[in-house]
Length: 362
Ligand code: SAH
Ligand code: SF4
Image 1 (cartoon, protein in one colour):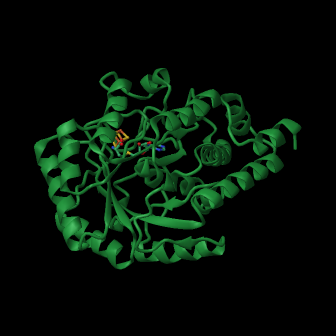
Image 2 (cartoon, helix red, strand yellow):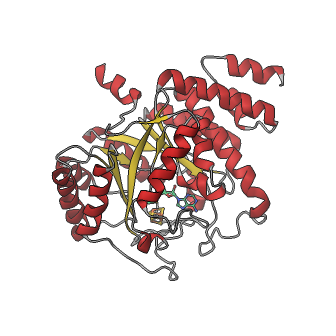
């Protein structure tokens, strides 16, 4: 191992150059040392318990047109769907019976009143059917302050909204002109002000993204004082403007996975007590990608509860895994994989991040 990497891994506080050096590691031994260090930090600050968040992919209707996303408005090849209230509640009952601590309702973006009130009602119903036990995270994109407030008042307490990249110039290249980096930042600030536990994150390995950008993303997470981080590798989708943006994808995807794992490790070392999701996009590259994420410092898994009938309709990127497995099968195999790496599942707990709990005490 290079002496400078050894020195960085022994440090308590990392600077920008340190983060860049860690993210740029290519030697397998150095990489293993990085993951070991991140795991130590994870064990000390959040423990070895994995929390499940049941993911419900509510709808693939979307008014936005992000260049990277498979369900963007202009992709005519997608058959659009929206789950009914009963279909969502079936998934919720499953999550409750399986003693997941919480559910995540995710969807393409819509701001119309019909959608806003549908979500408001759903949140209330989730609380009812789970006797107030299930935590509710929403991941429904940018909304007005009054919408965020209505959903919060209905009972949602966490919100996931990725910044996608903290580099405003790069953000512009990934979105049509009607998307605004400042508006996204403002949405994150509004969520805080209302009292949500806020999660954000980025895509890793975007075309045009540098290692310095990723180091700055980590600094951004720290500055925003986020409680949860959800990050994953960028995976090109064939029906999007970024389809050919990584031309030798087959050779690149292993590197893309490793880059994402190093990012998880660096975030864990730098932010210490936050919740970090091991996302499905990791698993899309390698079938044990999510376990690799846990070993690199992540502590949250979001098993997919969407009925297999709809799953092919929610392909944000190519090669999305588990298209033909139902939730029961997924939970059983997940638990086996988690215990196989010596960790346990925090059943029946909300699993707020120690960072959020500590912040509330001050
Ligand atoms: N519409 C909501 C939630 C659904 S999209 C929103 O945009 O916030 C959820 C996440 O999927 C996005 O934040 C983005 O980071 C990720 N995503 C979309 N396309 C992707 C791709 N091609 N590769 C990897 N992640 C992607
Ligand atoms: Fe819509 Fe979200 Fe995809 Fe953008 S990333 S097109 S907002 S679903």
